[in-house]
Image (tube, rainbow, N blue to C red; front, side, top):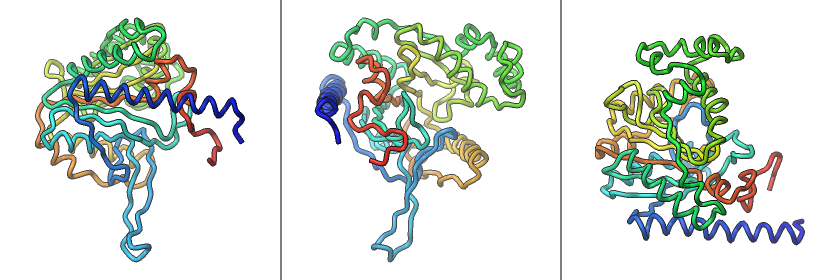
Length: 339
């Protein structure tokens, strides 16, 4: 049974989140003319990012009298939001529930609120301008230090690897030597990295354990232009086809959002999805969900587009200075929690 203090704390969180979500909607609808859309929570494909685990369920029609069908809870509403964008709407957004199995920590919950928005036409630079305006708008309402949210640092991935890891990633990519990243990292002093570790694993380790820790000394920090291998849903940069139009944004080292100049070439997107599908099957030794054919059809209706996924709960956590994500949730999941 909850005591009176716990009841009061839950009430305060519920009221805080009411005003917070209301503020986000006001920003997009009243100030920037976005259309709010709804996407399904039972989907045929939850997203194929190899390192994200998903939840699945089985639909049994007619109370057991029909053919069963497997559905998933989405790791992101991205596929369906791009379908909405392809219907002809120029600006769409959604505050949705997203689900990722196996994630429970000070910054992670298996169920969480995701804010995504997309522009067509538009690019990731347009989305970054939206992001900065959203930070300013919401920090004035919810942060005790709104000036922190106007203090912006920018690094490209290549710059960050050079400055913080001592690795010339650009040369590795241009020479097609991705397999050498583990060796280069060991030579740079990261001797605990396995010599045969994959490019993806080494890259993720260096970003999370080195670069993000360096970003803790900054307020808002943008990390721009990821290698092709780490940006499956974004288009290549014209000036350097080894890189893609992707940025992530951090606040004191906490990752808040992931944005793309969207890949709208359905043929190229299918190839990348198949690569991720194969990676998943190698990692988990089980069949991957089928590809979402309607998603590829939607891409054929788009040309230049930009989009972003922002973690609502983490954003609120950072704005109010909470020590962990559960402090801004009225009903957080906890270890061994059956409620």
